[in-house]
Amino acid sequence: MNASFLNEQKNFNLFLDLLKQLIRVPSVTGAEHSFLLYLKRELDELGVKTEHYDGLLVAIGKEPENGFLSAHIDRHGVICTGPNEFQFAAFLAKNRSDLRGNSLSEQTFQQISKRYINQGVHAYDPFSGSYLGTGKIKDAFLKEEINNLIFKIDGLSHLLPGTPIAFIDKLKQDGNLISAQLDNVISAAIILFLYQNGYEGTAFFTAQEEAGKSWRYINEWFKKNKVSTDKLIVLDTSPYESRQEADKQMVVLRNKDVNARFKSPLLDEIKKFCKKNKITFSCKDKFITEKNKKRVQEGLKPISIGSTELGRIIMESNKKIQGTTLQIPTTGYHTVDETANILSVKSIIFILSSFYIKTKNI
Image (cartoon, rainbow, N blue to C red; front, side, top):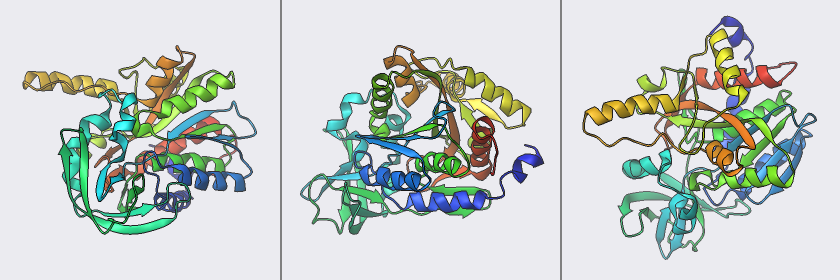
């Protein structure tokens, strides 16, 4: 990565300040309304036109076809489902109609349940975001009968069913690493930061991605507005088991997922841009395919290459919508200690600003 790249990001601390603010606003899967309103206010103050739908906030700049960016804004959390009963929000029975068992979330959530023990949490009103009390997770375990995680939480026995409970979180920095529940508030922060610095295209902020539903909101918007594109960029984080694995690339791309092949011309353009600017990248589908070869040799079951929001959009739109994913490699997936390299975040911002902002202030 060349020096000019770093010189162009003198105000990166402003991005970190923005990210810190967004992290403090809860957005549990299925209870994202208050977070979408927070984003809407920020965009309205910038003079960006917004359209707020159920499960979707659309930001429309002065040049709406100069870029189509998307980021899901829901984060994992807990929902009160009965008297002193708390379940993992994304995998409630009512959400399972859109889950196919092949997403990375579904493959990993059972393995990380014990990471939540002693985690502080706070409850909030799902519409206003008003604070309803704090508690602490004392235990978390898989209830096989309902195939979901059950949490024992001290301090929140007064809650009514349907009340969302978010993990208490704040941004932490250790050298070139930042940590928080980054999936996927960091992508929302990147898009908002781009608007603050001259982006004039269109952006989608979607709800319920962790429950497999977010693709529906975007696909419906494109259909009812009779709009199509082959240049939709979906931003997200991408999990790795170790920092050694994660730091082998600054950005993560994909050629395909289990639903569809990604055939956007942007995919090749971004690859060429990364090579030219010495930004290391890898393709997650190839990474998992190579990993599966080793797993088979070791007598282990292969893992899915994953289901993404973009793949579902491509498939369900009969390929009328195409695009590419652009992801930040992270460790500690789905916890408040999900960690990313600052250079990865800067790389994503640099790529997007170079493609879509004519006079860069970043």
